[in-house]
Image (cartoon, rainbow, N blue to C red; front, side, top):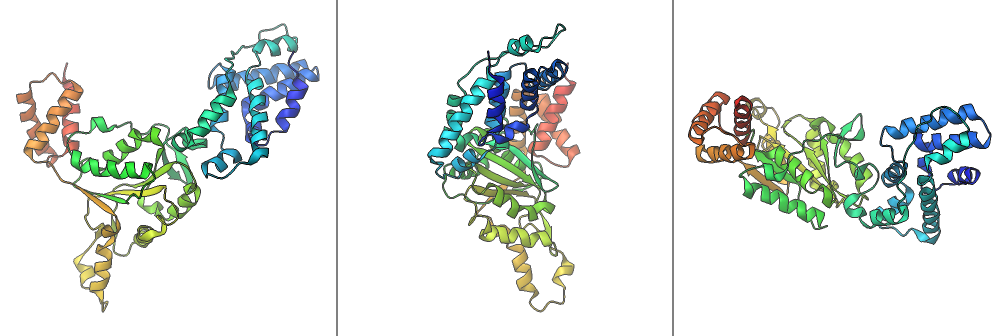
Amino acid sequence: MTDFKRLLTQVRSLVVFRKLREDNVIESMMQTMLCIEEKNTDMAVEWYCDMCAELYNYSDDLTEYIKKIMLEDENLYLLKKGEGKPTGTMLEACLASELAFLDELSAIPCDEFIRRISYDGFLPEYKVSPQDLSQVYAERVHAINKVGYGVYSKFHIFVIKDGVLTPVEYPDPIRLSQLHNYEEERSQVIANTKALLAGKPANNVLLYGDCGTGKSSTVKAIANEYACEGLRLIELKKKQLHEIPNIVEAISRNPLKFIIFIDDLSFTEDDNDYAALKAILEGSVASTASNLVIYATSNRRHLVRETFTARKGDEIHFKDTMQELLSLSDRFGLTVTFQKPDKKLYLDLVDKLADQYQLKTAREELELRAEQFALGKGGRSPRVAKQFVEYIKGTEE
């Protein structure tokens, strides 16, 4: 018979996994044990059903659930391991004791509760699948540079909402294998990303070029492709550039590697965000976070929208000011240019996408209609090619 009284005391003594006490399933389980010990059948039934209801939101397997919250827990032990700091024998002993406790907790069968509640009515059941949680946790710690911890172990794409780093549950699933042509351009970005993942010096990258040429898709596909290698992506809007110092502080000691992604970047000459990005690119990020690079896309080579009115200003040294504005793009260590495809490249893209989408339409007809489609869209681009192929796929019987 499981000693509920001892388990209740042990859960109160958690140090490494202290946050787990706030989990709804764990809390309901402990309350059920307490009510059983106090012989309060009515409350035991209520708390046990609460536990099962919360558990069913994830699965009907208690062991798998406890393993999940254990691996996702961001605790002081993992933080030390992630930063490469020594944990010490006392903390290691504490961890070993708590893992043994979680092992025992995760293996309690539902019959143990149902039998001791002494209730004649129906009570829901759950299953257990005993595992060695100590071994599972050791493997996770060993792979921390690729898997990460806490929310970073569950998600790989993030955005900033109300100043808080927020995971994207359903990111764009685009993969590199779905992107055609522009291999030379993408290879430069991939090589830079691999250098980052290997802990080598990596550049901030500006992906410049015409609309619809695959700049943003390249960055997103790279993030998806190398997520299992420890790569995470944080997407920022231009108006959120002031958040970068906070991001750097939050992830600078994280064992994972991060891309800050700024899509469709451009400024006006009096834009305050311009100065913020300039300061970052001049070294403030590189000097504080070797695990972080900035990837930005833009349709403007110099990023700053320059007007003739600005050139006619009354500043004495206006040429120096304009030169400073136009030099922002030079502060990116690597600039990769994506140009609009010519007719041959455009039709080649259509042909490859047609194979990918398994179109039935004859290729001669497809190429003719593809040119007509591009004309209606105002020009050729990979985006237009994809839109055309998806349109044909939707109209085919």
